[in-house]
Length: 462
Image 1 (cartoon, rainbow, N blue to C red):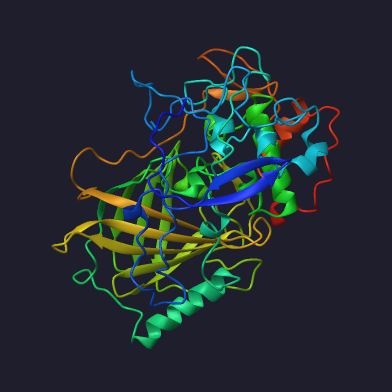
Image 2 (cartoon, one colour):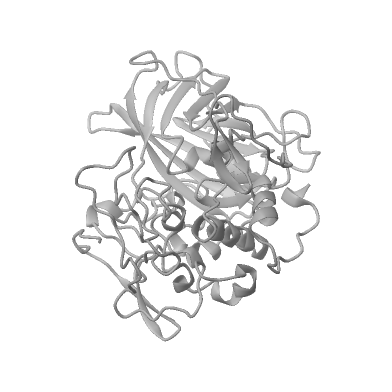
C-alpha cells in the first residue's frame, strides 16, 4: 500500500459521489514547490507554474519508481487490492472492469468509482504493463483500487491565457516582441548557448499529462463528448479486455504528443542555429521537431502549414526569439493517440515557450518548456503543460544520441499484441493507419454486441 507520509500542507475540496464523501487533494503538498513564478509581464507566457504535488492517485505496481526493472524495495501504491474495497467507499454495482457494455454506462463515466478511483496510468498498468500487476488472481473482482480522496484540480490544467486559438496566442506574443523592438535576430555569435543534452523531468508527479495524479473524470472534463467516448474506450481496453494497443508496440508512428508522455521523450538534444532549431527526443522512434525561425505559415488550407496541405506526424513549426525566450507555433499535425493520454485531432496546434533556467551565478542549468495546446475538436478549452529540462552537458559529450529505428517484433493477432520470433508466420488484418487503427482492432475483436454510437463523419477532421 502507499506508505508515504501525509502532505505537510493541503487544502481539501469536498464533493459527493453517490453519497460517499470524497476529499479531493487539490493544493500544494510542499510550500517550496508552490512558490509563484515572478510577476507575469506578458499576456501569453510566464503565468505561475501549475501546482506541484508529491502523491499519485494510484494504483501503481511499481510505486513512484520510473525506471526499468523492479527495485528490491519496491512499494506498490494502492488503496485496496485482491477483492477488498477501500474503507468508507461504497462501490458501484457495475464498473469498468465488470461492465458488458461501457458505452451504455455513460452516466457513470463521471464517477471515480467507475474506474475504482484509478488514474489513467493506474488502469494502463494494472495487468502488469509496467512489470508489477495489480489485477489480482480473480479479475475483475480483484482489480486494485486507487485513492478516491486524491485528485488534481482542473483549473491547474486549463490554460490561464485568454486565447481561443494558437494563431491569436502567437500573434499576441509576436506583438509583444515587436513592441520591444524585436523579434530578436540572432547570429551564431549571439545565439543562446542552449545546444546540448537535457533530461526532461520524469517523475510521475511532474505534470498532469503523465496521467498519474488525476482521476479519470477530471481528465474527461477536459474533452468534448466524442473524445470522452474515445478515452473511456481506451481505458476499458486497458483495464477490462487487457488489449491495449500502443503504437510503439507495432512500430506505428509515435505522434506529436509522445514528446510529453511519461514514458518516452525524456532524453532531449537541442541543436541551435540562427535559422533552424532542432528539438530531438527518443521513444520507440526518434522524434524531431524542426523549429523554423522567422518563417510564416501559409494559412490558406484547412490549418496553417509550411509545406503541402498534408498533415505531418510531428506537425510543422515556426518560431521567433524574444530576447532569450524562444517562442514556437506548431500546426498541421496528424491526429493520433498518446501513451496513457487522450486522442487528438488534425486540428491540434501548440504554442511552446522555451526559457532558460540558471543558478545563482547565472550558469545555465536547464530550460523551462511551457506548452499550450489548442484542439477545438478534442478539447473543451486550451490545455497547458509546463515541464523542466535539466541540462546534462554539451551536445558533443558522452555517448552519441542514438537515432532510434523501430523494428516490428509484435503484431495485433486476434486483437491482442502478440510477440513473434524470427521465422514465425502470423496472420493479421492490416488496419487503416489513418482511421484510428487501435479502435479498429478493439471494435472488431472485443466489442461484439456493444451499443457503440455512430462515429462522426470524417475521423480526425478529414
